[in-house]
Image (cartoon, rainbow, N blue to C red; front, side, top):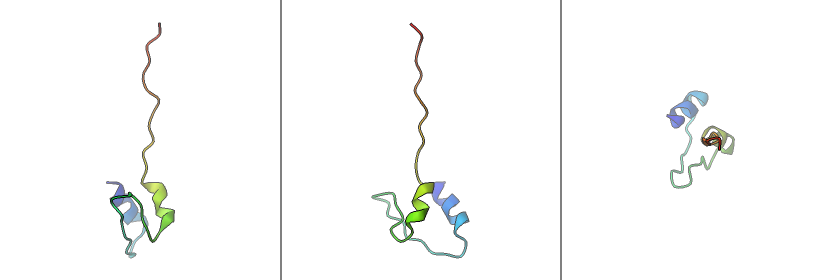
Length: 46
């Protein structure tokens, strides 16, 4: 899904995807769209 979002942001352009490193070797500015943001985990009050 994330690669689809990048495709929508770069209409008419071809980009190369390095799946082993999860990066765009020719367009580093697109790497910001391929990342995960994790929430803080759950905790129980003691």
